[in-house]
Length: 236
Image (cartoon, rainbow, N blue to C red):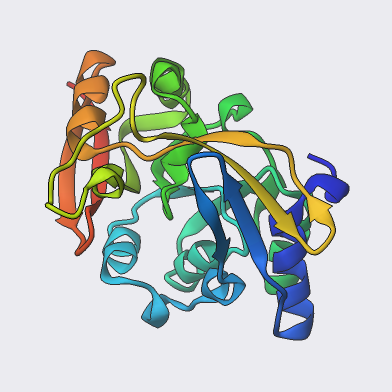
C-alpha cells in the first residue's frame, strides 16, 4: 500500500498530530455509507470494551498484534511488560505507531509473515482480512507456519445476520454466497483507498472451518450485539 492509497493511515496520522480528524468514510455496495470514529482507534485499556480487555488479559509469551492500526492494543500489551510485535499494511499507521512508542512494528502482510508467536491477536474483527470464506483454508495454513506449539489466536467477530432481519423479526439471509462477505472502500478527505473484501464470520461457521483445518475454537465471551471473542488453538 502506498500513502496516497492509505485513508485510514492518514486519518490515524492526523489524529495523532492534531488530536482531531475529519470523517473516515466507509463505503460498501451492500450498505449505506458509514464512518469510523477515529478517536476510538486511540482508546486506552480502560476505555476498551470488556471483550477487548478480556482478550488482552489472556496474553502470554511472544505476542503478535495483526492489523495494529494506531497501536492501542500493542501499547496496552507493552505496558503489561509483554514482548509484542505489531504489523499493519498501512505505512502511515506504522509510522504513527513508531511515534507513539511501539517498540517493534513492521509494515507487513499477515499472509507473508515469518516467525513464531505464542499469542496472536486479530481484534476489532481483524480476522476480516481473510476476506472470503474460501480463503479460510489459506488462513489456517499460515497459522500453521507462525503459531508456536501450544499457542493461541484471539480474535473477535460478529454474526451480522441481524442486518437481514425484517420488521417482524424474521431473518432472511441471501440465497447466494455467505452473508458475512462484504466489500469495502475507505476515504479520508481526498485520499481514497482501493476496494477490498472483508468478512464477518459467525461463531458456528468459524468453528466448522477451524475444525476442518485442524483447529479448535473456544468462545470466551459473547457481546451484547451478536459479537464474540474466540480463542483458536491447534488440535493435539
